[in-house]
Image (cartoon, rainbow, N blue to C red; front, side, top):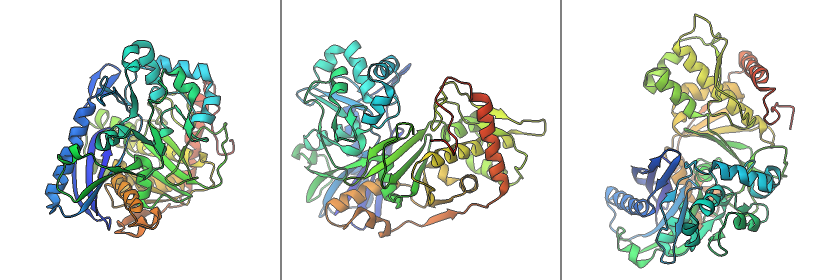
Length: 496
């Protein structure tokens, strides 16, 4: 059996080909294409689907396949982007990317209408946001009512690919908590919200469990795919959760960190009880009855990239790594990485980024160190905010995990081992594991951790007391700068 794992990323579209032993046979990728106008970010759904078929063909050509195998197309990637289809299955209008920020007023209106606290307990999301499809659908109801009225199917981006491959409109449960339309605890759509947003009854897809085999590829589509004895589609799961499965971190007590442009943290929890005072989003996991907690920090890798370009003149990552290693950072300045303001766990609505404790002896490399350390401090704050007790280790993937210096710094700051698998395609590997489990090649999803397991590097905390002292100083700066801001209560380790 072959598995083509399709990752619908925000920046890139990727297909990775695996065999039934989770051996990677080929990889192909293409940039995601958007039409941007101010805060509006749209895409062509048909172009997206054509790119998926092309990348599958490229993988088959690279691997030199004879066409004598069964093949499954497993889907993962972003959740929130939206596609509306008419009765013929054609897009009503261009797709709306999750990056599209036009519905800010509608997001505020939703929060006021339903109450942020009440909606949190239903949707699993602490706040209403322009990111969620609910806000965009409300915008369409108010500004493009004809388009919304003509939509027979209201799909998220991965749902759309399933529909184009199989002809069946079906969604997957691990992505529903990123819609603001789904009652996570009860496992069905939130009717009051769908009515408020103008979504017609029956236009939202039926929802199945993560990793469900949803059927055969439509014969008209098979004609455009590489030769195989049969093609089926596995619905896969959210990219962050697939990455957990792909790295063996889908285990209670093991934090999965995606160290990309956005710093995201996922944690499978046992015996979890909803606490409305603890602003952490919660989602249905990869298996029945499981809950995954999730936090996303916009000021993650984006903050370092901002300083690398603006402060270091585009210095190469390897050069920066070498310079950081060459000096002692005990007297380095501090950095508060609140460049985007609202970030968990504190959600300071008026926060700004800041360098502190500067003197004339500091240079741009000291500032770069401060940025990396500040993000590590924010990582620690989020890990300590998780309600599941001390984390056993952090499993890190993404572009930031390529920096050995930063990995060690994170281990030192957090006081926890940081494990970095030598696996560049963790998300696709996890989607392939779900498909293999559905097909019976794996007895359980966790068995993937012992199948062609990638090597990993482990970074152990140094135990240096200076790390605790600098974190305490970071916390003190936050208090003094933002304690009086009209935001949520400041989180400390001793408060819920």
